[in-house]
Image (cartoon, rainbow over all chains, first blue to last red; front, side, top):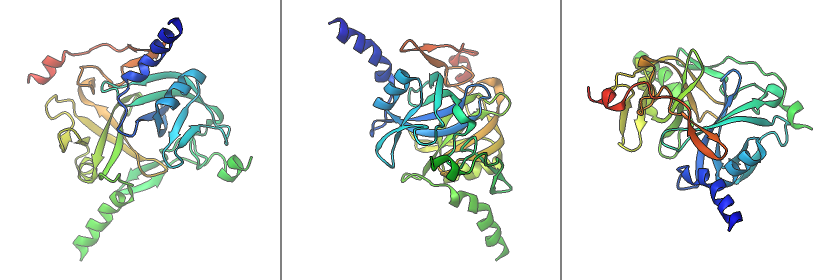
Amino acid sequence: MTESTTTDMTRQFLEQVRWTSDGLVPAIAQDAETNDILMFAWMNRESLALTVQEQRAIYWSRSRQKLWRKGEESGHVQSIKEIRIDCDEDVIILKVEQIGGIACHTGRRSCFYRRLENNVWQTVEKVIKDPSDIYSK
Amino acid sequence: MTESTTTDMTRQFLEQVRWTSDGLVPAIAQDAETNDILMFAWMNRESLALTVQEQRAIYWSRSRQKLWRKGEESGHVQSIKEIRIDCDEDVIILKVEQIGGIACHTGRRSCFYRRLENNVWQTVEKVIKDPSDIYSK
């Protein structure tokens, strides 16, 4: 009885999320210090529960249809500082410390490294580390 | 010939976006000065083209199935300072000046006004203006 009550309380915040028909919610990872947006991904119920439990970002990979423990290959783990939800309860923000300072698989700090200039998407952020050095570990 | 070439060049950045099967792309509105995330919405091709053309945020309302000129009722227009796209070309950031300092229909600065604290979504941002005063105009 006590155990199930505890579980219910723990799960209540998950019930409040308005999951898509596929059981997902968009998640925005934001640098907790600079507020820069680092990346955008999706979470399912299990990944959000695990993110809260382990205090590191765990997404749901739609392409691979499996849990994606951010940093499991690269070491670029995202340590959770704060989690927010929006007014419609259908979008999550993870405020994180980005270990290694690189969130993007291209070796850049942020995935949003292209800016629209005169109707052209221009790259405006440099590669910090060659991807072949990140993923060859 | 010249006219169509101009149109092609103008539209090329739209072609690069990886639209969903519904013809949409997620868009994150971010305060250009503080980097705070203000809201999350969706855009279709027309809304992104118009956003670039008019330099104000114009979304696609999925619930109303029509263009949503942010601020058309509230006056809380989002003036565009910068537009970014991510590595997968399937998410947009609008860096904006939020006119009136209120992005959320609840009268708060940001839609992300709830923070997860001990497994409960707690409201941590105050209402700046009563919604009935915003939308009664």
